[in-house]
Image (cartoon, rainbow, N blue to C red; front, side, top):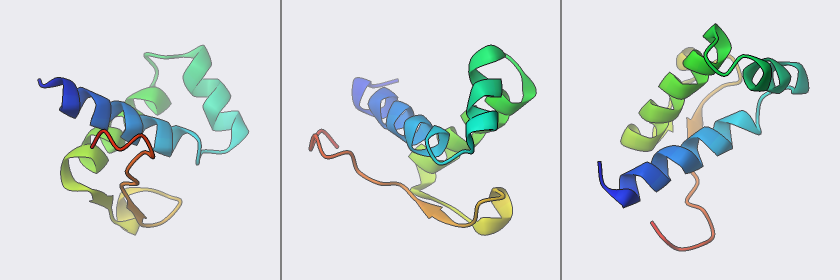
Length: 73
């Protein structure tokens, strides 16, 4: 995997994580190998690779990948 793609995965994960409610964020932190963390990782991979998630793929609605302001991507 290229460094650029790894950074894109990380940015997608962060984007999704910070949109989650606090209780879900806490669960992901407490159980990094748990179900919720796994679901988040899967959605982050799809977001990074496809650039968007449809509303049926996540409970919070449709989402597009936001390019971080660092200009790396």
